[in-house]
Image (cartoon, rainbow over all chains, first blue to last red):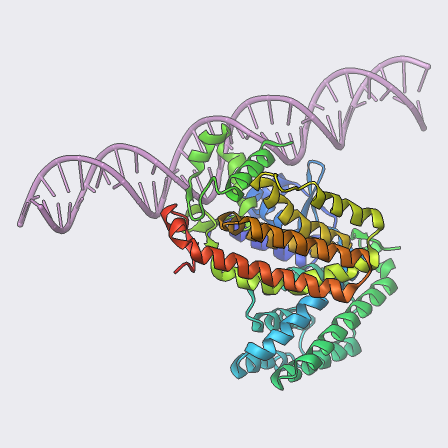
Length: 222
Length: 222
DNA sequence: TTGGCTTTTTTGGGATACCAAATTGGGATA
DNA sequence: TATCCCAATTTGGTATCCCAAAAAAGCCAA
């Protein structure tokens, strides 16, 4: 793989894991020394990351995209029609094997699993459901939405009960798809997205002092 | 504006106007001489265009993204839930002035207008409706979808009657939004997207010999 | 100390240099 | 004439180089 793609993936990973804080400035020269490559592949990686909206311009400078809490509501509003459509299509199109694979993914994440694992599976579930729809545009849109949500979900306290609730909601959605009950699956999916949004906003609101203390640029944080 | 953005916009325009044919190979050195800039800004522009899926990699080479007729169906399937949601939100949120502005845009395109004008307004209408929803993610998704449709619409015969029908369907959607009738607006929008897809596929199918003769890489063309 | 001014440094944008891999083109050979 | 092989060319990937603008650091005077 080209050096540029390696650098792109590494920076992306650092951003999504909050290793690079939201709003933090990135200089091409610092990245140059950090990744031991020249500016050419680094600049290409930055342009690419800008297209994914993980990195932005601030005047002439590069910054890690801040987290915008206002976006979280718009994002839920965006996801509802897409994911309800996705589960309906999944009912019509997904094979039993496809569904079983998603089920296995959920099973693999048990109570003792590390936080990173829960985080990843919680994102991947929605992408995989989108994939069951068979529509690549829906998949890409959900991928983008979940990526944008990803960092806020790290910030979420992500307590045991909220994990439990999300997990059981995922289960329920999948069950309705397996049972070919599109209306119920769609209703469940819409409820789940709304619940998740509320959980997220509530816990971020409770934790706002901690976020400021860590110096993260979180827009819309009172 | 930076040279890279100028070059990006110019290449983008050439692609969307079919000045650069779908599937055509682009070499960085040719673009260099064509735009009288060095490879640095051209390379950045290409990476950016790749993010918009207007340009792709073919091995080590750059090519203009081919047109995939199979995508047209998936694209309509993607647009329906988004645009029905958009018109519903527009009913709830758009001001009379906002709606009047879109109406004025339609009015500005009269019978004698050049083909380019019809093409542009036909795309912009959907983006502007999405904007009335107030949801930036819906706007961006619709922009992307309409961009991907754009070139296929040039290939469409785009006859007088089909123009007429599209125009009156647009009118009807807008009227229902102005009258705050979300259900009717949504039904109208869904029908319009389906009708457009059918018109497009039918006329592309009829015209397939002409497309091959022009050497365009059109995937899924029998 | 502080407020404005100048000088120095740093930064991103662009141009160019260099390389390795891939492609192309000829020409020798069967 | 067809085929194989090697040299020359072209291409994208990367590393540097140069520049103008912006930011930072001194620095002097009030």
